[in-house]
Amino acid sequence: MRFKDLFIDFDDTIYDTHGNAVIALQEFFEHYGLGRFFAEPDVFYDAFWSANYELWHQYALGQIDRPYLMVERIRRPLAAGIQADGTPYAPTQAQCMEMSDKYLDLCADKPGTVDGAHQLLEYLKRRGYKMHLCSNGFHEVQYRKLRASDTLRYFDTIILSEDAGANKPQQAFFDYAMKTAHADRETTIMIGDNYETDIRGAKQAGLHTIFFNNNHAWQVDATDADYEVYALDAIKELL
Image 1 (cartoon, rainbow, N blue to C red):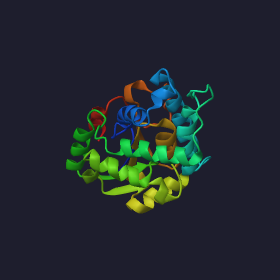
Image 2 (cartoon, helix red, strand yellow):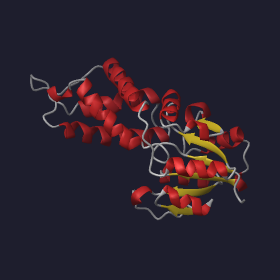
Image 3 (cartoon, rainbow, N blue to C red):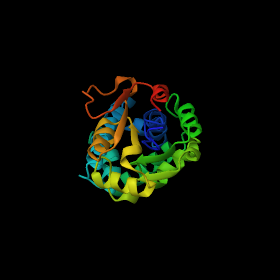
């Protein structure tokens, strides 16, 4: 067996983060009665996803901190809403933080996983690999997601950026992960769906990589990936 340790991303690699978040965001919209401010819910949803993508990208690069991300991913989409007096909806920072906590709470208990995730994890476990979850997600949220999706039991180690003091794709994250997992670079491979944070970051840290390009979501020349697959089931042929 060439590889012994598997570094596996969680969000949208194993856990269906986007699918679960779509459901949670609808619940969030209804919970706060946001229809008062948005004639069409899609105006809010589109603004949320745009802000969320940009902010998580900045967070991964260390350009913003967690409190800023949590406030801004609520404040920005809500600013597209219009109050009864015709002015933009402008909740306070404290209100945005409370609403962000509610959104995370709604997300964390959703059980959905990416197609084939449980089957792949069962297969890798039977094969005797040591599996280490590597994520930029928030500590308390990720453990709830792991339990809700019944995937915690597969992992030997949970490696989160908040514990590492650095985010993927930073070298410091992967150095921390290697030390925590007691792994060797030559026999470790990173599996992830985000080309920038998972694949390019791991490759620059000297690791082998499997790029899970789910449904061809990334239109890139995947030169930093040792392998590229479009479904989790295909990873069984490599490992």
